[in-house]
Amino acid sequence: MSDKERADNVVFIGQKTAMNYVMACLTVLQAGFNEITLKARGKAISRAVDVAEILRNRFMKDKLEVTNIVTGTEMLERQDRGKFSVSTIDITLKTK
Amino acid sequence: MSDKERADNVVFIGQKTAMNYVMACLTVLQAGFNEITLKARGKAISRAVDVAEILRNRFMKDKLEVTNIVTGTEMLERQDRGKFSVSTIDITLKTK
Image 1 (tube, rainbow over the protein chains, first blue to last red):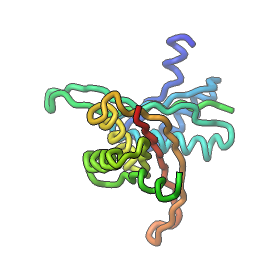
Image 2 (image 1 turned 45 degrees about the vertical axis):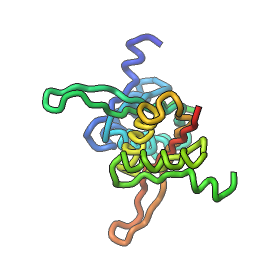
Image 3 (image 1 turned 135 degrees about the horizontal axis):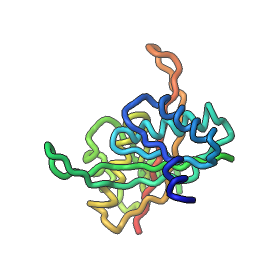
């Protein structure tokens, strides 16, 4: 997989509603990718799980499965609060 | 593993601070269990990942690893909002 392909099938989960990201994922899958990775940090982690579950149980029922989930920790630095760590999650889904 | 043992090494993650659950997990591990499962629903999912990361990177550094992460969906029903679904996560950690 080239760098370009890798970038195109990664969806970063932020502060919008889960349905926004569900739609973004469906667009990626309709573009022909058979694998998609959801990436989230901090409080958006719960939303990333929601997005994966909505895709798997509703929009892509029996056509998509979770193949890998990895958690991690990133060190961030901000002027107003100094260095702090934040948890991350990567959820990989693949079409069946 | 008996039902009793299974219940004793499961920590349900709720609305308290992550550190509360980290301490609960350390108590379980000190009681002699070599495996622990964190269970969370909805917004507490992010906190469950925080607890796993804090244990793995700080209190049990190089002594604990994530062996399995499973996401799911549960249907709940409440008088004030009817039926609704909520995402769940189970994170299993094992001592090395």
